[in-house]
Length: 368
Image 1 (spheres, rainbow, N blue to C red):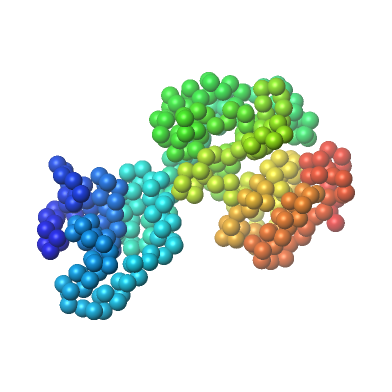
Image 2 (cartoon, rainbow, N blue to C red):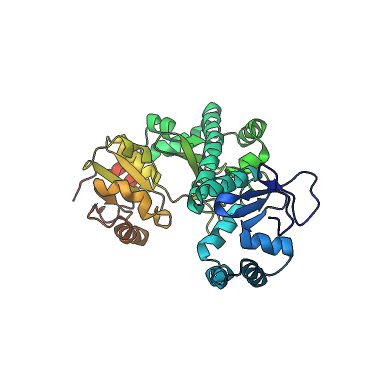
């Protein structure tokens, strides 16, 4: 540090090199030879630090530092810094989406562990906890506001009963009341980070008002998908409309708000190895299976099939996949086979029956 003229305090803080600091804003992490400037949201390794403090390019920094230690091996080892691996570039993009508090946590964990993935995991966990508070309150207050009669009639016509509707779904029945309540309880930026508000600050579920909450293994609400149900009772967007039938929480940049997850995953916690598990293409199909006394989870569309890592628990189950009767259903079977990597049974619906919900309305599911 002395070579760069840095006066380091006992807490590992020093003043920024890019502007005058009244209070030191740069944290030095000795364990990983890294640093972070909280006043400019800039950080990196010791070579990056040399570049900033000396105002030189990375190649020059490597040469200067090599001469300083009198070691050609230093220059050879650090040529890799000229070409950062893709994973680091991805991490940098994620860091931009963090709050100042999250960045501080990231660099603290990175400094202690030297493990970038562990540092990102710590930040994501912190974001999930905060988002869970927002999502939990949203679900609670939607239940306070109740249902529109037309929406409930529509769901009943799809074969769901009142108990299933009340337990597994909520509705944005009074948009402005719910919007106002959430903004009274939480700061706008907190709601945006949770994915509940648009860039302009409006509740995103304006047209997708039938809400399907997703739980984690502990049964806490961690994600929301809204199903289109407009004021006039239409259950699908106009043809050619860019808005799809389903809308999930906005991407938060950290990979926390993603639809690539299983619906009703909490059921796996109580199931024993070898137990039969039905996997449907869509949440309402899974609800029909659950309503009939079967254990089921759902994939929210072939494009949202979770990673192989998130499907690990299914490898020990007697899995029965029930795809929709269309080309997307066939793609799901192939994608599921690639991800799961083990034998499972595909249950085919009769010709002319689109999905599980439609089959339940016509007759009891027959396995084949």
